[in-house]
Image (tube, rainbow, N blue to C red):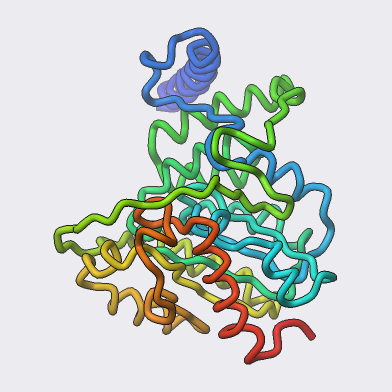
Length: 314
């Protein structure tokens, strides 16, 4: 029996080593169409590489944003500095499709460094319905990979995340991304210091949507609660914000009230789809992202509701 177990252990180690080497070689030399389960996306959509590079130069902030693309495209640090104080330090740590599982990883790495007085956590029901794979690839490709990355991969447990993590770890080890430079302007997107991405002003064409409902994943709410525990243990003011999406899309979901009830149980929560009225065509560039006109209105309203009527930073 002992001989069998030793043989199995040796085979397992051999398999992991060979598999990892094959992933590294396949990822480097195979055409993209032949590697659907490996997607190393350094410098990809969303300027995550630039955001994390800037973050590493910052010591502490007063206000930190977390969440999905609704965060890094919806909370403009320039507006907050203008309306509150030019002296406050603001940073946006949102990322594309960021789910609580990826937020947990980012908090484990950067919360102590940033030491914010206030955290605004953008909560979009779609991220609680997601498997987290898309966001995991973004984080793996644009940041360091360590034991926190392994824990994230275990929580997601998808072959694409595991393969990309293996490939990314080789790139980290050999320093293959050390010379990468991401342009500040990519297509219609411009990176703004503080973690924000401004899109060239465009407008959304109004659409109708059939009725549907959010389908939430327990794993994401479990990750969300772990995130809250980390933040609340540091006595940081924590605010949950459901950023505006087009009214047509928002009203197509029949269980928004269930999500609101869940969020209200966790603490200070504001659903700006119920607080502010925006025009689907004039203030959005797609069905669930504000254009700059919409961002300016939303941010000023948020500041009025959340900060000017309360004490933000003491």
